Length: 508
Image (tube, rainbow, N blue to C red; front, top):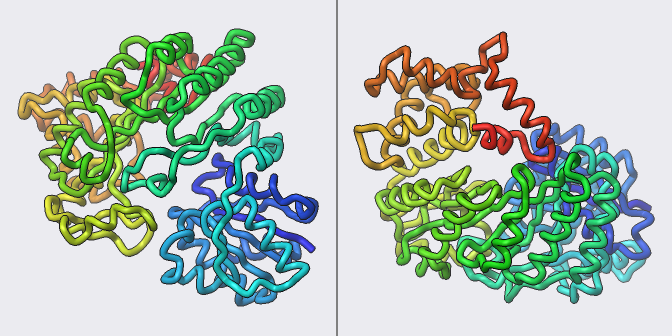
């Protein structure tokens, strides 16, 4: 009698926190429940074989926007070769608009929303009776104090090779309509002392990289300070064996007490994800996003100038009411603040989010297939939206990667336009016209292309080659490592807790 909990992660380095939360709360069924994680791109028949090798009675799948298509195929195959196995679905992708989804039609049962309590209860009914009459079961949301934390379920293999996801709270008090958290009533904290005790055990076992999934890490400053002090204590006690922590923060809420703590973190140990999304007040009002833009900009500038935190700041293209000119102004304004990375996202219609209410008025056309990306609005037609999609991809390759640190300012500050957005858009359009590709562009080839672009913009050929050689990208095809590359690698080794891309930013 075996229950399997399974999902398809986006990468091997991602360890599913959701599955571990379910396993931790299986109660008397925990002894007959196992995890079986896969990575998207694996052959469906191979996954079916591995799942059935456990001789399961029940398989519970975590379904997300990035894995729903492959999980649908997986469930269809399971139902062909082992129809007696009971399939239970859960996760954000199937918790809303579920009646129209083929994966739900294929499965036996569905748990919507929170599954920590409802999934174990459903499994008991399936195994011991009475047989559940309803296919769809609304997840019960218990007080967090009643839940068992899952962190002991991270294996030594997870700790050694994967990102450990942790949560000090669930939910979000904000109502941004493009986000599923808009459906939450508020944010609910776990007991902070119990939570930190769990982190203490993980650290003692060798964990050094912690990614918080909290939507609003800096909402409760007292809690934020306790968590930050935990990491500062570890850094002080073991400076040669540093920890690395990633938090998502509210951009316009950075009181002095929090700033004091942030300033104590050395380089390569702290990363913030900051959602700006749009600097246009009218667009913000349309999507119910409350944000003090001036305060947010002031805080980002302060973080860049007075802390060693690595900043990922998010913008979303395709929001209702925003045209390219407005988005470009927001992009240029954000670039002026000099965050380490601008995460350029394209709006997606997550199932259940209120953004759908703007569809007709703002001519919003979404891809019907995951990840449901916006294709056009009344302000941005399809062709222009495709240009933005390509811009986002090339921006990640050239700017966010940290490989073109010396070359990027020359691209953005071209005399042909005062707008960095417009200058990079010209490069983006040229790269696509030249390569007809946005993926599988080798670093060596990309460096050559960027050099060619600079020459076409009027730069001397030798000067363009020289500036590329000074960058990480320009050393991609160099057999003899230059002093700069050796320095970059040495720094990356010293700051081993920091992700590789951040290490490149730090050496720029």
